Length: 256
Ligand SMILES: C=C(O[C@@H]1C=C(C(=O)O)C=C[C@H]1O)C(=O)O
Image 1 (cartoon, rainbow, N blue to C red):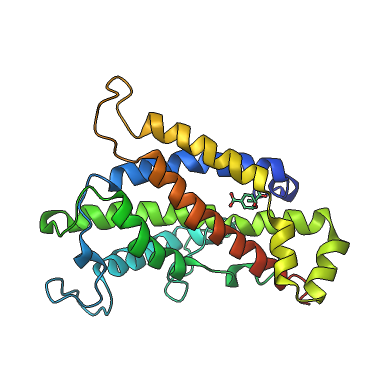
Image 2 (spheres, rainbow, N blue to C red):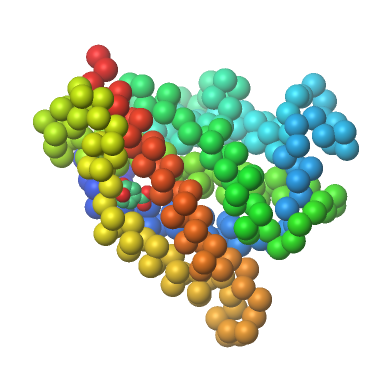
């Protein structure tokens, strides 16, 4: 897949292959986060024990927003597969623009589910993958760093739904045009859903977690990311939000 060559991006097989590759990245980042406690203070807005200069928000928000500013200066968010968590804070890059060809519709960057992704990550994923409950004051920086890695990988995976949606739209323009004109959200959701692909993903994740999540030479070793939790995260969070991205992107696809 080469973002300077649209035909390689809007190829559904290429997209699905890329989504498979992202599974490994997400699993390993979850494993790294699993070594730490839940550390709820990292996510509390204006936490008394974590004063940050000239900033209103959580410790994680401070770290993530400042990293995104640095990343924006080196052109990260000019790439069509990157979606910022703080779009209002990113800055112009000092590097020359790559001038990627337009692959998605002009409004694509407005389809941004990162607030929901961050909320669900904190409320549902952290409790599942953390090794224990409670704060670990000596590791707030490490925890925020691991969280950012997890969030950026989840965001890229979920917002890949825009490429999936554009590929599906172009594969059957009459069908999707009718559904969009009829504002048939359920019809669009039904048509973008591929249960066989979803099933294959969940089966593969089970096998990967059985291998990656433990020391393969010591089957009785402590499981860090269990197959049950990984499947639950994908089935109840990652795949549904990806499909929400697809539907929202498609609902606007006839905009001039
Ligand atoms: C991503 C796709 O669209 C939908 C979402 C999927 C996912 O998030 O894994 C898988 C299949 C589809 O239901 C696809 O068709 O590959």
